[in-house]
Amino acid sequence: MDIATILDEAIDLEEQGRLTEALARFEEVLAVEPQNPIARAGALGARAAKACDDGRLAEAVELCDDALAASAYDLRALTVRARAYLGLGRNADALADCLKVLTYAPEFADALAARGSAFIAMGETESGVSDLEAAAVLKPDLKFLLGQALHYAMHICRWEGFDKKLEALLGAVDLGRSATRPFWLLSLRSTPEQQKSAAAVYFTETVKVAAADAPHPPAAKKIRLGYFSTDFCAHAISHLVTGMLEAHDRARFEVIAFALGGSALDPVRMQVAGAVDRLIDCADLPDADIADLARAAGIDIALDLGVYTARQPSLFARRVAPLQVNYLGYAGTAAADCYHYVIGDPILTPFAHRLHFSEQIVQLPHCYQPNAFRRYGPLQSPSRKDLGLPEKGFVFCCFNDGFKILPNVFDIWMRLLRDVEGSVLWLLQYSPVAARNLKAEAAKRGIDPERLVFAPRVPIGQHLARHHAADLFLDTCPYNAHTTASDALWGGLPIVTCQGETFASRVAASILTAAGLPELVTKTLKDYERRALELARDHTQLADIRARLWRNRETCPLFDTARYTRNIERALEQMWTRHHSGLPPQEFAVTEAHTDAS
Image (tube, rainbow, N blue to C red; front, top):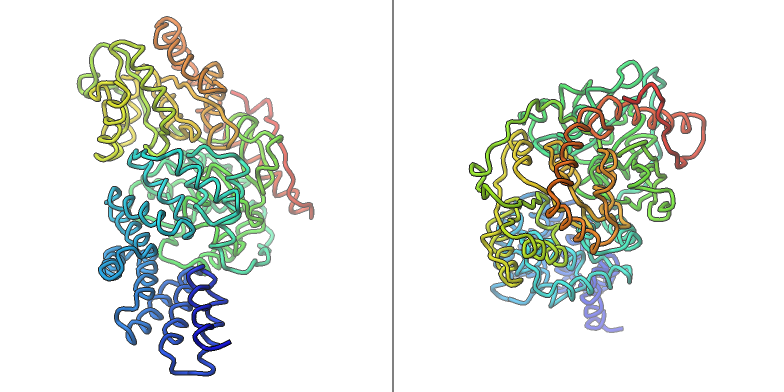
């Protein structure tokens, strides 16, 4: 095979992302022609791209710098360096490299995708989505691009061509391609099998560390728990778990929090620090160092509060503890053998769904979600006028993030506005672009855009208090309200939800049942619409439900932090007893002791 043919093959392999094979071909040429400029640049580029894919970002930048020293307009080196800069948080530098590439090659899909990511990271989501969608047309097989383009289009409620784009994405997932990050699939109409498949592909593609042996912590009287999160800050995760962390029985457990992101000066971080025995700030450390810290701390059970919402899979692949648990933050399976258990409940994770999970299912008695709302004290609800709402008329509400709103669910909401005279829909102010797009979508459906009212983001106490001004919370499907569901119920606002087959689509059903309101759970979108309309028209029935909800707040399992903590402690002890006895992880349901029931 002549040199030109080998080079063509190497370049083709590199474009396919088969970097190890491409590098071997480039080196084959260099063995014969050490000064061949194409092969030298190609080898450097392939090494840089592989370093970037493997998470060795600083090394990738250095390799790209070497390639660019030889050829200042090496478009591939500029693009790979932009990707590495993105990973390092150097978004402006990434954008500058992309602009250089696109000046010379405006249809270079890799650079368009990188520029789109840079725009999104810098808060310019609309421009970012335009770039991502253009790149997806040019190169739909680019890793994770189809999912990224659709997910961020949903963030700004840009729904043009939604069904066609979803079909293309799910088709790629069904073929086992690297089409999406797992989290991006949860809010779309996808099956549990597709979500598990996407997670498995993503883990294989992105986690490059060799599987480590489980550590053997020194024997201790207490079980050492490690809670790992990037969200020990003003985030829903912290608002949910802080009460549980405080309530852990210190005679039986030692509790250590590993903060993987955020600032040590964040007020919520300080609350978390006060709720645990020790908080270890790992925000600026590489995974290897964090794993060493966890091993040195002697963690027995590590609970991952993020999984595919953050950086943890690569960390947990290093085996930071003998038992590792997928807990709370990610609404699905990790599809990775480094996670032994997933914590759910009978509604959220029925044992009949075991094939949808790589982990063993642990069912808590009521609801998987902890809560600590009592810390916020009495809620003084502002008036509708102060909130920008009409003083009369029915107020439908949804404070879920905008990416959870699918066009077919929005169709239902607009029909409800049509059928309930004088009603409005109260939404969270996701972004000005999303608000503009939603108003336009309402107009397309024959609804006055002014009947959509947008609520600004406010501190958690104010947010909880304002729920009382609404009449009915309309859930999203298939990605339900999670923390927002508990927020609404604590604020005295009933929710109508539609329960599906995926983890993310069953959360609100679990929460409502634990709050004593299972009659607000429907199983089809047709019944969801019918139930919402029935409650909007039957003020007596709705008032009865609201009164029962208000009474239940003080006694129901959903808001009983102490009761929840005893139940999850029982689960953790059972996991550890099996492990300590040399038994493999196995699914089980926690039995609540009668003395725990309130």
